[in-house]
Image (cartoon, rainbow, N blue to C red):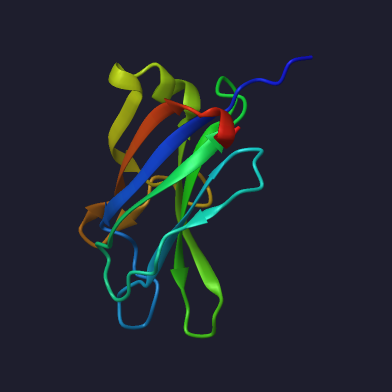
Length: 143
């Protein structure tokens, strides 16, 4: 059985708005974990401290083996002083949506879902994250 060529999804983690408060100061020290479902690789942004409106402006090349069935997940976490992390929320984007978009891109502001799949609300309204994804064929050395 021939191996399915991998594709790369360039995932741009831009910024978030109206995150829920996660510490006593009423702020959050947040970072994102990015991964493709079924893949052991995870990508982590830097922590943006002390804000409910973090700006990351980071990108990662996520390898995808089975575009029709895989999802890109972006999980947002709040770092705590004791070194642990609180789950804030998640955005899930099907790779098939990225492939079929204009110029093979998918971008915009996405609602962040909480642990019970509810839409998160911060003190100033709905929590959203701005993301951009670009679908690329992987070069032979990136398979």
